[in-house]
Length: 327
Image 1 (cartoon, one colour):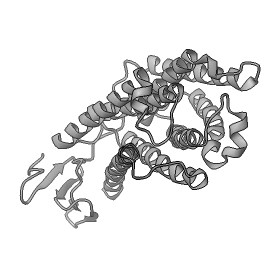
Image 2 (cartoon, one colour; image 1 turned 180 degrees about the vertical axis):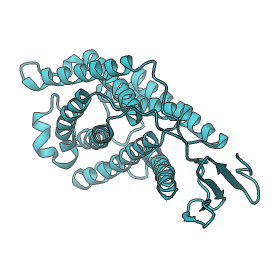
Image 3 (cartoon, helix red, strand yellow; image 1 turned 45 degrees about the horizontal axis):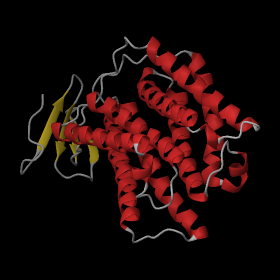
């Protein structure tokens, strides 16, 4: 049963299940959990997501073969993450020439992707596997297409470009295969989202999706506002980041299992944080960013928003895990 209003002067929500009732007061973001003697759990602090414990028993494991795939992908992503943490070592071995800013940006994303794949390796279940595989499929298909469109960036006399296409095409095939085999399986029942936050996630999906489509179809125009020069190939590769994010948010807008909420929140937090951190670290060495330029400020706002959105999702997921543990 749900009572109260999200935006009322004394807003409070009551969620009842077979085991516990939760009261959520309007005092976000500070919150704490305190069980009472009657067995009712009182949640002080309002979560904007309107979370309530819901059953997630229909969450079967994936075959062990997917764990092997996850391990292989993580090993590859460790190399990609090296563009952020050790660009001097990795850049000469990358499949194409990358500038310092592009290297650090790519490395930050691959670090976030590595954490997401580690979550799939840890759980290896339909949730969060559904989310991870959908985002991985979108990303690998778009990057593969962008790579084929821009073959001139690759020197096929080296091994690295061949390995690049092999890894991406194989990843797209494997993630697509597992999704196809599970296409009839319903998603795990997730936490309940308030109408306000369902509306926010719809807007988030639209913004990320439209920006990604713009980067893919009009790479020069959209990327012209970035703090550093971005060529069309890199812009199209980066479009996959936004489109994969849009796909992930869309899945959770429809239904938000707790593990998927946690994984998506962590991914968005890391993408936003490492993109901004990478920009500062790289510019400290080359001094080429105009920090007061409108484009730079808009770029910082975009990735700051992505990171903050991830923080909200993490907060909501962790509160839900805490409520489950306490009950």
